[in-house]
Image (tube, rainbow, N blue to C red):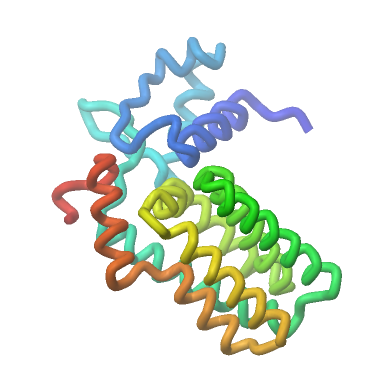
Length: 224
């Protein structure tokens, strides 16, 4: 199906924001966007409205349109919800995963191990995303799958940033192994706990994460 100019522009901007090519706080110039994507004012306006609705963009009267900065309180709240959604996916996956899906999960873990051995946090990030997608599908709950993916998209730049913290990639991989072991064993509560703890930012991980985000200037100072 051919996408409209609005859809094409929205998808491109969303991808840029999520993957860090447009930084939090960066101004979006509607006229420049129109020239860049060779579209009229209407698709630009509609695309920006949709991005505002998704929380990726903010509009400030008389100042302009900006890539959203997320306050630390809101960010941690989002991670808390993400942890609960992931935990629920893990619990259901431990009960419902098929043999084929379990094979896919093991293969995803193996690719994470390869990326970790290579010391490549960006490659690990993408393989990590595929690993979690396997678990969402294995929950066999379409609504939960959709909600988890939607929030994961909102948190994508920050989850990627987590892997830049020293030694986080190695500890993440160990947590992945525990998650797979729990799902293989069909231990629903263990899988739920492992996934929740894997995603939740707490203790020293919280301090390290906040320091990393502050260093890159991606937090609202008045929310810290």
